[in-house]
Length: 371
Image 1: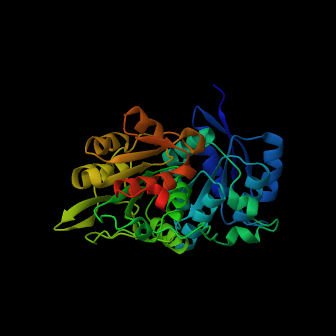
Image 2: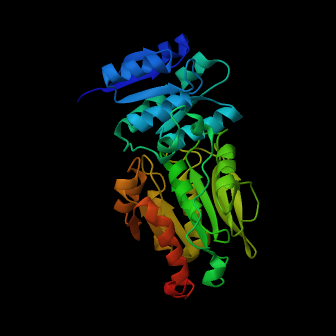
């Protein structure tokens, strides 16, 4: 089997050396080039034709985001970002994912060399996933100007063709809760779903595989784009319609019943399916606590986290939507959910929110044609 060819792009000679060493220790990949800046990287990519590149965000001569924007517009390919674990680093990393990067690795602010070595398994796993990812020209990269100025601007949600609110469908029970699980490629897929939900839709509870330090920025970003309010979940808070709750990085998120209300439970614990937060934990609580009032959505991601629990949701009466292979960045978790018999509908990403709303209308006893 051919090895995965990787080009490392980082302005730090030490980081380039360590990443090259980590990659070359693997039997299934090799570092075929290391560039100190995007201009050198451009020539390496043209001459060496790598399968994956790792890209530092803060670079000399050309900003990493500007380079990524040009790359995804002109020659889309799998990119794993190497970002700094800071608030600004989190915001820029999210923009990189919007521009088309497959995933990211957060390097520590201090002790970088030792920190990167400790992340060796994570880095190489993400390179393997990226090598198999479905890469497309992102809308954000296509809309960016040649100077890259637009790469730093947040895109606003597209206005609906006509006002769509759950009130226009009749009053729905606040018992309904939407549960979303996602991993690689999921930050943008989740955004796509949430952008198309009305301000007064049922509550949405989300587990996206993401490390500590990034989920707060991710929630804030979604809150600025979506009609619903989106926040990082807090332990014990009431789960309300018209709100989205993101599992904090490094903690499991589940739901519990407290009298007439649902509340969020944010807890530490051992990783489940190697993940914390884990979709399995969230979906099991959906089956146990919400039952037939739950609607499940499984989006793009590597592995099988949440697949078995989604089948438990279905057995408890939930109705489940699963993203199809063609629209996934990585068809891992959705494939396993389908194989487990958990899916009621398998849909392209663009159809999930519309079908979800149709399902809510139909279960409310309202004719879709009236809307």
